Length: 385
Ligand code: CTP
Image (cartoon, rainbow, N blue to C red; front, side, top):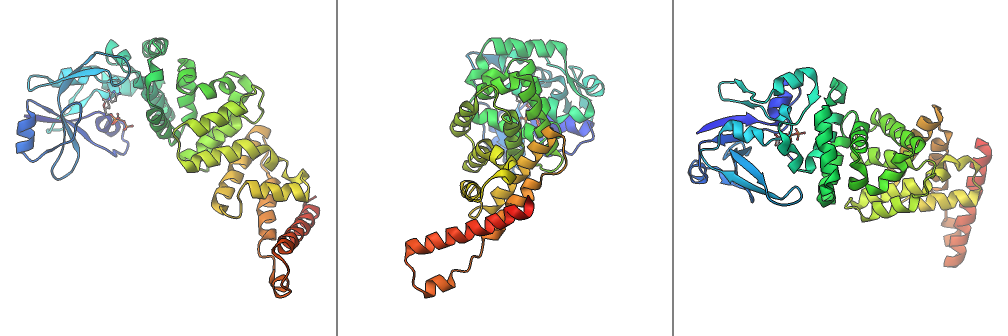
């Protein structure tokens, strides 16, 4: 049997980038032989094994044939007579269809090396269009390698449009869409991911709720500006996504704030990000206008933002609001943030000992605390204005 390093590891090695995961292809072997050598079978649909020591993935060389709709609709053929070239042919992009043998030689039957040099994301064969997930993958690679100057090849773009026309993108599980999106969000240029989805018309199928604000030139620009700006200070995918959505809805000209909120609650996101998105989408304007609020309104805002129970998320919301506001208004100062932080600080630690000693009723105690908070907030408002 012959073993080859394949896919992303070969690509990233040639690009001089760090390799985080290594996938291997085994030619000329059988599941029985692999198991007799101590490899552990893990593949449900096709034969993949984990190396007994390194635990890296070793897949038997295989070919694929489309037999149904969606990205699961494939029939696999793995046998000792499947060649490395045949295995590489079924892959998505030429830059992902190279292999390295144990002597360190690169096997590159489909021009991956040349496309790496010319910075082109190009499909290997027309079979590219059989897997709708590849639209998302190419958009993700466009984001990941944007800083190196990579562009999607024209013909590949056409094939992506063809996949969109087949509407098979609608069959990709939302969890899978989010998985690709998260990977794209942590790159240096996540905006490229959304631009490619937009230019291939895939966005309306993948993220229907984002399509309307993206289709409006001004909202589109606000969303991408906020996303691009937040990338220099925050590398967390959730915070970046919240900045994008907040920016897209900085002005709700397309009247789809409710639609987007519904999407954020229904899409399979974690509870934490759902809450963060909801706070940014619902209260960003109150934060932007914080200095004009009355003490009652301010106290209510602090309560809605759950600032005292979850100070870390509160700071994140304020950071996101700051980035959205500054990137859209082209300013550098967001006094609102310090003001809102001071507002929470000033209502902390109100001394209730005297009232407790006086044994005031629970209702009176609540009322006294509230009056004390409002009075401290009024002082703060006067100080800032
Ligand atoms: N692949 C493919 N089509 C897909 C998924 C994967 O052709 N829909 C192939 C590509 O050759 C890819 C390899 O399987 O390089 C491994 O896939 P994966 O680990 O998902 O991605 P990588 O290319 O390794 O990318 P990354 O490093 O960003 O994870």
